[in-house]
Image 1: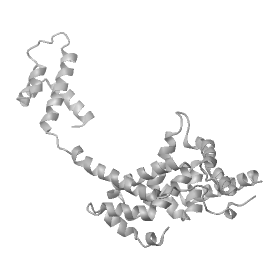
Image 2: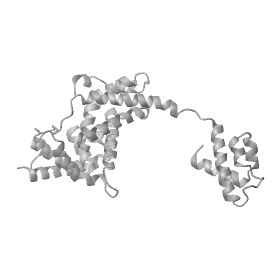
Image 3: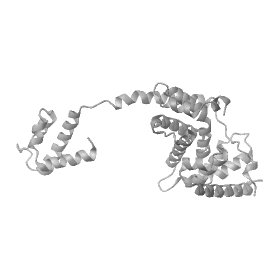
Image 4: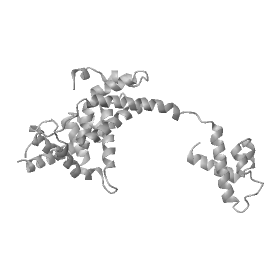
Length: 112
Length: 187
């Protein structure tokens, strides 16, 4: 059998001229882009916005599932009042234990 | 590798990479010392220059992104080869169809060897690369790291994770298959 050791370690391909210099500049350009993007990604979003969004979502789901035929039931806060989020504690107090359980489950699943 | 690149220590590179102010200098030093060896490692895996180029760029960006996770317990080169190998495998995986594995790409990689070879390339060098292209992925990686990069089995273990005995077996099988292919296809 012929041995590959006699063939050597050279490659039959060529690397284009200035390839490494061009690649270095390209990598650095990508890194600069990453550095610019990072602060925007890390921008802090007010926790109140998350609460408003979660509460609005829960309200919509609960209204459709628990009260499909009584959309005008005044015992449950309407969608508009939740989305305005003037008094989020009041909204949560009006929710039943089951509703709060559902909210807790959704928060765990999607993260806060 | 140029004389200048040899004189750069891994510690110099790592300390700059971990320092936000000097990170660009760290990347430049990294490219100067390891850019070419990593390019050829990738090229031997993916064969085409364009793919090696993409994989090298992704490797370097990942090195930058995950630089804080580098542990000084390992050689810098082992960490770099590990990232580069993952990028090569990721790229090859993208070329497979739903029910194919990277190992099934052997024939198409073998065909690319000849089309990618420079016009004045030695026929024996082309044959050797064709034989390597047909190897199962693990054997190919072990063979390339041992034969071309001249890495010890312990270093290859740090890169690929398999036991030294498994790596030796892989190299043995790879070497035999390559010899058979060359014998069969030589004029």
